[in-house]
Length: 70
Image 1: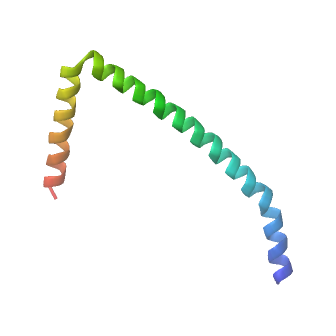
Image 2: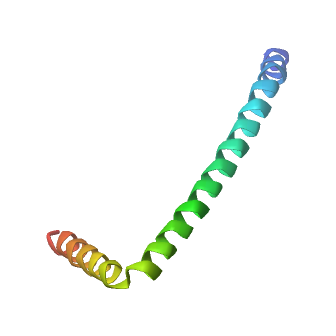
Image 3: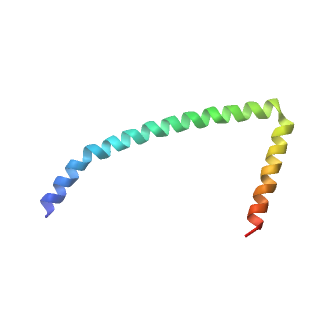
């Protein structure tokens, strides 16, 4: 029984390593997209501060309403 478990473990190791590599690639892509999104938001805030403030206020009111509904 232990031998079978060890065989299964060694057979699953390459798949596990491949999964880890793919996860690292996806995480790096997500970090890059997040950084690009952050730059876009900062540019929008600098270009249109009034609208950005209005959007933030509206989202705050909406979220407060959702929390209060409980």
